[in-house]
Image 1 (cartoon, rainbow, N blue to C red):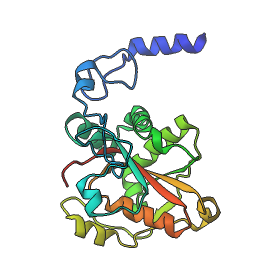
Image 2 (image 1 turned 90 degrees about the vertical axis):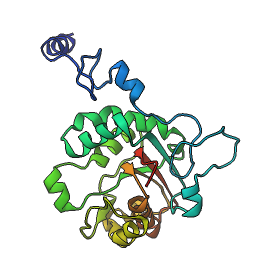
Image 3 (image 1 turned 120 degrees about the vertical axis):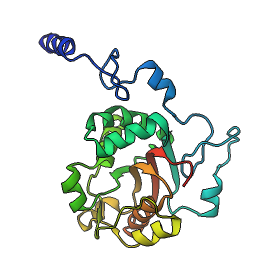
Image 4 (image 1 turned 30 degrees about the vertical axis):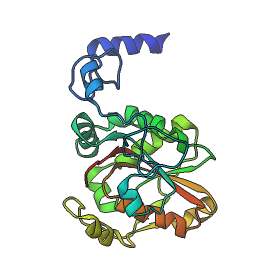
Length: 242
């Protein structure tokens, strides 16, 4: 009763606002009606490899986009909650660079719903890692926040430091596919202290954005090299044109 009264008092002093535009909303960590309608959630048919939306209907067989067919992925399956444009892009950038860590709570839940089919067989959830120098500058890993929320909601095992960046790489922005893969080659490895935890286990990797898939490929290969039985990926947003 006391907690409810405190929450009511706080809401009167600090009314909940839309995560995207700042307008008042009915509850915390939500979007107003217009922003919700403008947020490009991925529904219906999508690529089973990366989650990008596809035209047509599911037919019971594995569906892949042209990019996944042209460049086979080292992971087994992938899903995305949003396409990286408009409101989704603004939310991702605010989470990643704007200290808007509160966005991770609803975004992790959106991701959990989009990746529901990947949560079977008790996968071990892990985030795509940041290099320690970048972590010190940013003070948090947005992928960790998303993965933590999703694993908590699903009741799955979570390992925040399953992977580590063994060398610092430059920003991938502006690089083409081949450049991205070359930049990330051997830059990520599984943490030795988690060898027993990863061996023979399905790993579900979580990241904020997928462009070419180079970072997720490097993480997937590190997991497979460490003995994972399979890797799946879940990303908050998928870039539809790399």
